[in-house]
Length: 230
Figure 1 (cartoon, rainbow, N blue to C red):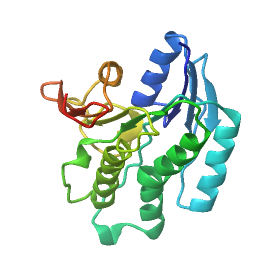
Figure 2 (figure 1 turned 90 degrees about the vertical axis):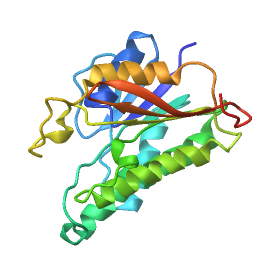
Figure 3 (figure 1 turned 60 degrees about the vertical axis):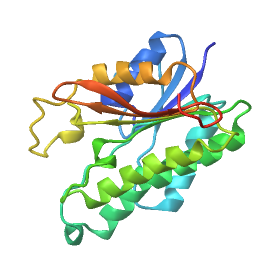
């Protein structure tokens, strides 16, 4: 069955690798981001998630009007900020909340209302979802909130299956200019393959950590349609 798959944050890194996989499998893929991707065979919609909620709502509506009948939402957008809470500007905090939480909520809200069949949701968070970090207070908070969003949405029988994956550091442009050592970080193509594997099969909800040193997958929780552990 050919699916319409929307990948938010798909112009680089894991999102782009997932787009490459799904396109090669014959699905219709639309990716969003700030720059036109180098991958052929996909639709592209610009979506720059800033700190203005009204602008964000308008931009999301535009994307969904141009790419209709979405079967699967993959949310892989990220925004790097570093510093103690008093060093972050109001714009930094607003953008972090919008990228990490408001945008996926708005997308799911609208897609559920438009979908004929139950929407499949794949949320790519981070190890910051469960690891507090001194210089990433807002980032950790929003990643944790996105994980809880997925765990709560699974209780909605009007939605399809929900996958939440929390990768450790991945070698992507996300770390550009951060001075972070990326040598031991995960390969984005390998992470993409693991996410595809985790998303297959029968389940209602699955939460998995994708860890490094050594690279491995740990399924933390997997529930069936009755919310019983599998």
